Amino acid sequence: MNLIGGRTPVAWLQLSHRPLRLLAAVAGVSFANVLVFFQLGLSGSLYDSQKRPIDQINGQLVLVPKRYTNLGEPLNFSRAQLVRARGVQGVVGVTPLYIGKADWLNRDTRQSKQALVFGVNPENPALKLPILREKKALLERPNSLFFDSASKKAAGSVVQTLAMGNSYLTEIRGQQAKAVGIFKLGLTFAADINLIMSAANFQTYFPEKSNDDIQLGVIQVSPAVNEKQIQATISSFLGPSLQVLTIQQLKDREMSHWQRNTSFGLIFNLGVLVGLAVGGIIVYQILYSDVGDHLSEYATMKAMGYGNNFVVGIILQESLLLASVAFLPSVLLSMVLYQVLVRATGLLVAMTVGRALLVFSLTLVLCGASGWLATGKLRRLDPAEVF
Image (cartoon, rainbow, N blue to C red; front, side, top):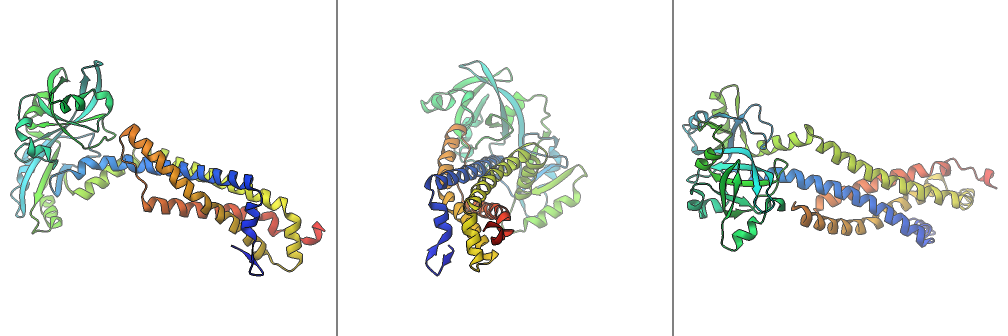
C-alpha cells in the first residue's frame, strides 16, 4: 500500500470509501477470473482425458504407422512388424492392441451410441488395468466384454445391472454382446463409451479387419536396458511407413492433434482471452472513474510537490489490490464450478496450484496494465489547469 507520511494507505482508502463500487469491482474481476478458470479447467481435463488410455498401455514403447494422429482414428499395419521387434535384445515381450469403433445399443431406449473398442490378448494384455488379469476367464468367453463405468449414462443401466450380479445383454454391430465386468478408464473425444474385449471377440465384431492387421503394437522392455536404445534399434529396421514411439511421445502426439488440428485449442484459448479482456475492461472503467472523480485531489497533491510516479503509483496499487482481493473468491467459486462439471460430465476437473498461480499472475499483469492505461489523464495533468 502507498503511505503518506508513513501512515495513510491512500490506495486502499480510495477503493474502500465507496463499498458498493468496490464490491462491484471485485465481483467483476472475480467473474472474469472464473471465466478463465473454467476454460483452463475444462481444456485441461479434456486434454488429460485423451491421455488416460495411453497411460494404461502395458509397455514402454509402441509401434504405430507414420500417419498415426490419435487413438480414435487407428490405422492398420502388419502384425509381422511387431513380431520382428520381439527379436531385439532387451525386448521381453510384444503384444497387439486392436482398436475399432462400433455402435453400442442401449437395450432400454433402443438408441445407439458410438463406442471405442479395445481388443487385447488375455494372456498378455496390452492394457494394464487390473481387471484384465483378475477376470481373464470372463474376458475369454464368446461375445463377452468389459464396460467402462465412466461411459456416458446414455449407454444404459450397465453398471447397475452388473452391480446386482447380472450380465448386461445388448448388441454391437447387430450381434449379441454381453458386458460381464467393469473397469474405469474415462471418456475421450473419440467416443461416448469405452469397451474392452479379447482379441478373438474383437475379430468376431470386426470381421472386415484382417487377423494379421493390428492398430497399435505394444513393446515391453526390460528395466535393465535403455528404452531409447531399444527404440533406435527397432527404428533401424522398420519400413518407411512405421515408427516406434515412447509412451510420452505417443501422449505428445495425441495432445498435438487435438490442440493444433481441431477447433478445441482455438475455442479454449479464445475463452481465456475473453475472460481476461472482461477483467481488464472492468478494472479500467473503475480506475478511470476514480481518476476523474478525484482529479482535483490529485492536482493538489501534484501542486504540493508529489510527482507523477507517486500519484500514478496510487492507481497502480489500486489495480493490484483489486486483483488480489478478487482472487480468493474467484478460486472458491471455480472450485465449486469444477465439482459441478465433475458430476455433470465425469471429467476429472481439479484446481491445481500451477493453474491458480497462472491465473493470479495473469490477473496481476492485466489489472496493472489496465491501471496504467487509466492514468493517462493523470500523467498529463497540470495543476494550473485545474485551479
